[in-house]
Amino acid sequence: MIKTDILIIGAGPTGLFTVFEAGLLKLKCHLIDALPQAGGQCSELYPKKPIYDIPAYPEILAGDLTYKLLEQCKQFEPGFTLGERAETIDKQEDGSFVVTTNKGTKHQAPVVAIAGGLGSFEPRKPLIHNITDFEDKGVEYMIKEPEFYRNKKVIIAGGGDSALDWSIFLSDIASEVTLIHRRKEFRGHLDSVEKVQELKNQGKINLVTPAEITGILGQDKVSGVVVKQADKIEKEFELECDHFIPLFGLSPKLGPIANWGLEIEKNAIKVDNSLDYQTNIPGIYAIGDVNTYPGKLKLILCGFHEATLMCQSAYQIINPGKRYVLKYTTVSGVNGFDGTRKEAPKAVVKKIE
Image (cartoon, rainbow, N blue to C red; front, side):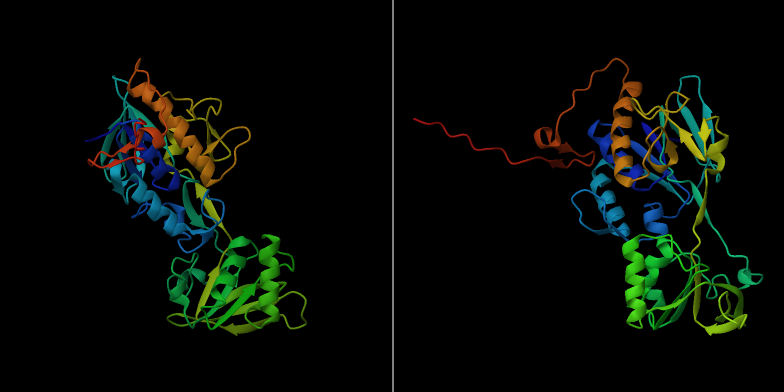
């Protein structure tokens, strides 16, 4: 049995920052995540994608953000159960909770913080009859390592931000990038649409609209696709490629957490946002993209804020009746569980004669 003060379900940015805020309160944390590494979506889905709305960082790659968060919380020595999914939760007589994973690993804590982002993800696959035959053989539903496509012919399908952004990014890596969308209009940000148009004019991106892919060509791996273009007399034609990447989004699912007796609204967990982001079950909190409340914004920086308030509330559950006086780290410094001490240099006081 793994015992801790706060059991965090989800090791994405919000979960990792929770470790730091809890550490300031002298609370230990353990994290459970179904992915084999910490970082959540930032590590698994788009590690090389830039993020622009993290305070103090005009631009930071998602993977780099994960690395810095891990470095920040390392001093508080969090525990990790990775590659396992939180399956069941049972409340004990003493008020604590026991969470068991799909592999039978048991964890006990007086407080559970669900920071599972949007839950587990499944790619939305296009209705192409033989697409499953080519999965991992030239068909990929997400881009983890852009260098994998160096000097390759790549066809991307989709009309949202991911399709636009990756087409732009790969235009300097792949030998040829073709973007196919069933409409002439795109759903992405205007600056991304304009950038794609600019790259098309420069001959760095091939743009085929309105059109959709109806078949995949190849034997042991992808060698091309069949394209049906709506505004042409010819019904179908073939395009050569080494990789076909359909980016039609991901379908989020809460998974087993949806069966824990929590109040669910539109695939998210309802919380009390007026105080501490606690769920309808006392002692269980939901922070980050996994929760919902009036005025909710699904932003990483909002998850950081929610984690901070949640930890203050959790402190009262773990230490009933004990008063905690908030001190700024610039004043109190940071004492790591690993024995490290960080503090601002003390001013030299000189007596004036």
